[in-house]
Length: 446
Image 1 (cartoon, rainbow, N blue to C red):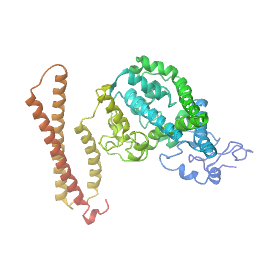
Image 2 (tube, one colour; image 1 turned 180 degrees about the vertical axis):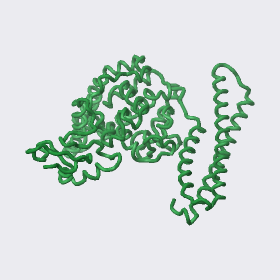
Image 3 (cartoon, rainbow, N blue to C red; image 1 turned 135 degrees about the vertical axis):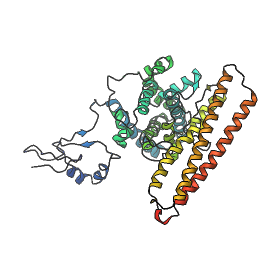
């Protein structure tokens, strides 16, 4: 007897006398589709979106990590949603909801979520700013309550994610599937050969190393004990544990995990198409600004993710408040000309594809006009970048005690404003020239 089509598209003969059943661990694609009709749509495509791993002839996972499972992580991540969501619903349906319970949940959600975003991510992983040791300590304390490992290990994994994004060395590589990037990668023990060479700066920080030793104690003892004590104060310790403990843990976990999964699948890529990271304003709303992920991967050392004033980015606003109170300094900001240059490269690539669809000889005048506008735009952008670099040099000289002439500084600022104005004007001219192509009958719909 020959088994039918396997999930990975392979065919393999089942050993004689062994029935093709799940009970005997010999599973075919056709058998599984008969049981789970929606499975076929999940395991097609390149790469599959949700089930990147495929079951082979012996029912084992092909492409799955060969390391040992981390049963502590696996059981906690599977059972905490049952306690957090199911337990909270059952408790609330029987005993009702008091105002302080959702307030406690949301307060801890924001305090811990901001400590992950502003602390673990933008400060410890990317060094996007410098801050007072007291701020470090607070973010390490609340960050540990997230139960997402220590800042040392979190930052090591995240730096490797940026360095090897979308490759097999990316710890939460989205090309292994949505579920892998979202949560499955945490179900396996770390490779014993992995070290912390990627975070030498953090290894020298005594506060980071102390938190690394006691992260789980803080996460469990304080993360679950504190809301239980608050609940006991109101005469409902179990309500405090469920709302401020388990439900809050689930919310913090999965909003963070969505950045590793959804933010690499759903959204726009205005700054870079070299990786799968996307900008997603909807996701940013639930992740304290982390959803502007395409910008972040293009400029990872910028303390902002949402660069516009109207972009929802509470992590950015918190860091700015630290600077306003002199608790943070040297906030790293990507020069505006570099941001515009990145956007221009992406837009130019799209433009080349559009122009390629216009038959030769049709609208040659429009094509020449668009190319001339682009050349002027790039020339102005280069002048803007040079003026910005000169301004940075003068500011650096001022910090070392030198005093550049005030007239020179004023002239540089005037040039920067003028080049920015000219750049935006030539960009509008370029876009207008491109829009003319859509009016041509030969290229309708391109």
